[in-house]
Length: 285
DNA sequence: CGGGCTGTTGACTC
DNA sequence: AGAGTCAACAGCCC
Image (cartoon, rainbow, N blue to C red):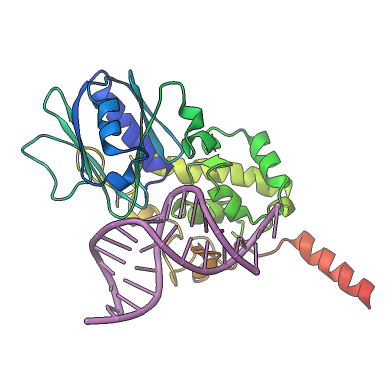
């Protein structure tokens, strides 16, 4: 699950290794992952020199003197810094650098390798619409974002156009840390809950970011991230006891995705809403 | 062996 | 408007 901790780690590694390097040629084995025809893509980036590699949400942004190289890892995959003699078994694209280092890119299901013109990044249909990075949003802006919407809190936090970088893996622990149920209506969150959520976003993402991302993704040198299975609090731990209260963790359906929650620590509706429902019920009588 | 599950994203429907 | 479904293309688990 390449989400912010993994993507930010990859961007940092790539920047360290490739800033200043020149692309000699490209080999695209899966043209469907591109946003433009292969020939055009190769022509655009052949000979380009990498400036800085950064990230925005789940997108890796390679700034070159010829335009932007944009990479989205989809549901997972590898970006490996290899040599012609040590290629992985499987890859969808190769970016070959002048110094005989090859970047081998693989998505295990789907992913994007896009190009954007130098001054046209904001016009890219996906990158251009991204919201602020999840670790960069201010407490006031997060508060405003959530208090203005009647959508479920989980769907807002996962909406990349509002907040970039959180995905369906880290969301479980973030909401658990905040003691907020994923299906809570955003504008019913109390001031305390919003504060708690702000802190929990940082805690949930930074714990993994500091360790170079999750164990199920490899860094560019082929080594797994240091955020281990046992570092996950409740995500993917159905039936196991909640680390706070011991209640068995529940796996529930939340729209198209699953969520893991502690049914005791994360209540589906707020006390406020329960009170309002009671008042309404009594008034009907 | 077949079906259901899984980290993303956006287009489409009601 | 918001929520659900599906489809891009693999691999694992039961």
